[in-house]
Length: 451
Image (cartoon, rainbow, N blue to C red):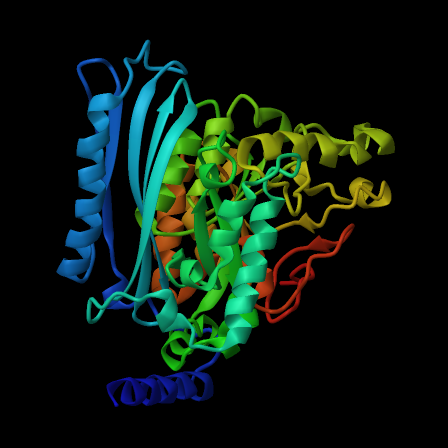
């Protein structure tokens, strides 16, 4: 009875929002969704470092559970860290992170992960997930999302099998382990998180591919599964009723400085997911950053093989880019990129050469690439922000970590739900096409803004 009453009350509220307010009005961040996230880094006697994240949520029981898991892992794993040779590339560290995401008006997901690295190579990882109703503290399980319908469990099984097989395409996954993951009982107990426009199932890569220690993701976008959800789950994934949307993107990384790491910390602190457009020839030397971006739930895309002017490249050289970028990306995270952003936005030569990528432009330029102060960045965001925008930033610039933090807080208070590029287009059922350019996604409209 309580669930029915709550469903009806939220439904009425949703109808009122749609009928009484203009599209510019949307739900600001809910009080039950507010989180304070902090990290403390310590140096051990052997020079190794331990970075532990902790949260304060709106529900003390939730805070206690997720924090205790992270703290326990830090205590258990830190004594076994190898001696660090120096503070640079030959370091030794343990990062225990808690990333969080919100959906609907009451639910939140948390992914707790420990990552042990030596000389910037991931040596081991462990993780677990939790999803809660933040008003009651009740834990949400996969069986709370879906009922007994065979259709949904078969869909989940088929997608898990296909997506996990697609990782590291030149390697064969452990077939018996894969079949176990695709079974109904395993799916009911699967580790998952809910986001602005997707349910994501999470798997450790080394279960299927023993030489790899990152995470694998199997995403399901809400438009394709909401009709198969329970009433509560339908209500808590109806984010387009409650919020406006946009996508925060970062170009030019990973950065040799600490800026990429700081941007990732800002996203961890604020619970936002973003999209990173990475220069292909930097992937090998900065694989650690690419892996962290992927494991932190961000979308990872291409920013061409190098940052040169494509006008000066031959069509043959441009057509050779996808293979070079994808070879490096697969070595790092197991999967190829799905789309590209051309340096400087110079996409016409790429389309003329029929390179075959989809091209993601932007509709709101923060001009952080000029090195301007955060206050100036925020002026541009506040003046230009529009529903469906793709926001351009650069994780190589000194002020961008703080700018990203402030942008996300502003988005939340203005009723926006930040999405990845994949989610932004999936919300409207837009399938990215090869040799096609996209500037935004506002109710299916993807062309350049005229204002």
